Length: 108
Image 1 (cartoon, helix red, strand yellow):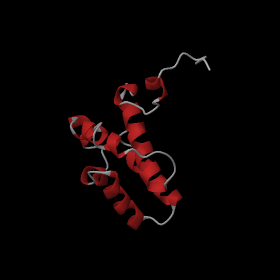
Image 2 (cartoon, helix red, strand yellow):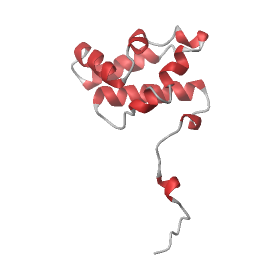
Image 3 (cartoon, rainbow, N blue to C red):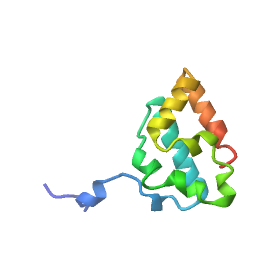
Image 4 (tube, rainbow, N blue to C red):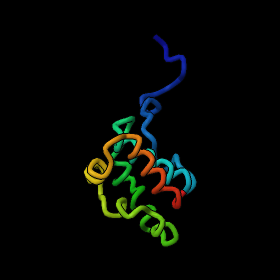
């Protein structure tokens, strides 16, 4: 069957790239989404984007933004550490989501 959409295998990889996020707001929003997904087991939570694509480091290395990054994000080097932190702090997904949203309000 012909590929009616003219897509190649690379087009089918829908994994976001850091370049897809142009502004600091978009990057912060994506970081917040990754953390929310990890904390609530609801959607993709790509540890590589947290660490390797360096969203966390991106903000920690920007003097004006680093002081706005939540302290627990500064301390947690990967999503497993974030999960350990938040699962002990809050029992419900709703509490976790609200906490993450509140913690990111200054950065965003």
